[in-house]
Image 1 (cartoon, helix red, strand yellow):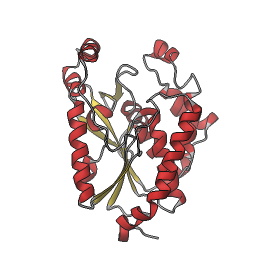
Image 2 (cartoon, helix red, strand yellow; image 1 turned 90 degrees about the horizontal axis):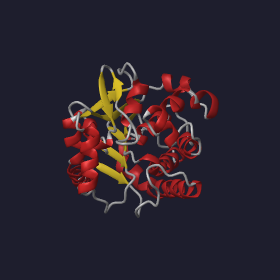
Image 3 (cartoon, one colour; image 1 turned 135 degrees about the vertical axis):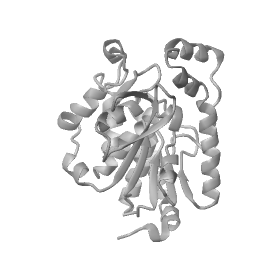
Image 4 (cartoon, one colour; image 1 turned 120 degrees about the vertical axis):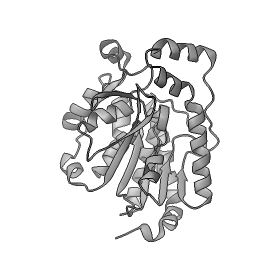
Amino acid sequence: MVSENVVLVLQGGGTRAIFSAGVTDALIDGGLTFSRYAGTSAGALICVNLVANQRGRSKDIVIKGMADKRFASFGNYIRTGSYFGFDYLFNVVPKEKIPFDFDSYNASKSALYVGATGVNDGQAHYFDRNTCKDFVAACSASSSLPFLGKPIEVEGDLYMDGGTSCAIPYKKALEDGAEKLVVIMTRARDYRKKPHNKVSSLLYKAKYHKYPKYLYAMLHEYGVYNDDLEELFAMEKQKKAFLIMPRTAPKVGRKEKNVEKLEELYQEGYERGQELLDSLKEFLGEDIHE
């Protein structure tokens, strides 16, 4: 078990997060589990499985879930306003399709927070699994993508995709006193976000004009993301962060259904985790406890 001085941070990215599922499975197989987690969107969903100590479940959720129209389909969008069926994911899948170990999750002492974006203020908000009154709603909100989802109420306010304000949710970890970060990203090292083009900007404005602060955050998310990358790269040089990411741009979209592509990206993540395991253990040093 890695000490509380370290936080494992997982970026989202829809089905690209199957890379992170591969990495984390490799770390588990290599004897590394963490006591503090932070995730956004699909990264948050993986963290939930890690807290429950369910190796391999995140991979199954992506591959089997994306093949199930009850979880991912435009039929869902027409019926509910959301492409992804979060009610199905959280209430049916764990009990009937891909069992979730509720006992292990509830008994775990591991900390976990997920990041989402406030629709009314456009700011990053973080929900702690131990204090949030509706953590399922928080995870759903974190994963509710623009255009593909809708605002979700959590504790009396509306939230959406954490990727808008905290795509890599590491800042809360630093505020809480983390001394080291292990960050798993779903984009290659050279990736940078670009400003939205005129067409997409107009679409955003048409869709979200009722939420001006959220709209502003979406139109400027590229700058926040790129600045966060530079800070993380600087922390990496200072030996305060250990970054794990794909070698090249993944050939997987954020709602990919091609099983072969998903399996390939999972395997890439697993092999990347194996490859970096010794270096990661060296980085963690005395923070690895029996």
